[in-house]
Length: 93
Image (spheres, helix red, strand yellow):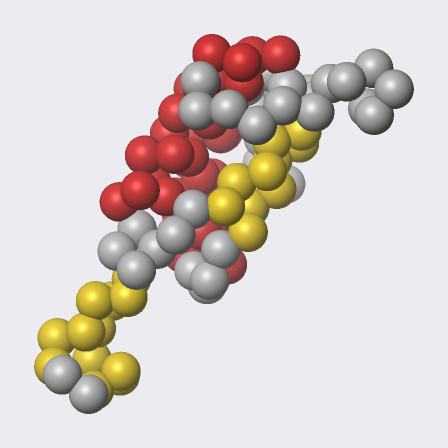
């Protein structure tokens, strides 16, 4: 990668078609319903949902997707599992 200069950081989703690996790091803000009460609220996952939809619609089947987020793994899986299965990017086990 360093010799061939193939590491790219971009906002252009068209290059996802060329990717072997995609690293996803999207901020998901926590919205509290009450001031000072962290137990009553939810994560705003709209940006992560939109990002995963774009990635799922664009990448090739061989592409590895690494997701870094504070969102709990089950919630992440709900976001991308159906989309990736639909495009045959993931095999049901």
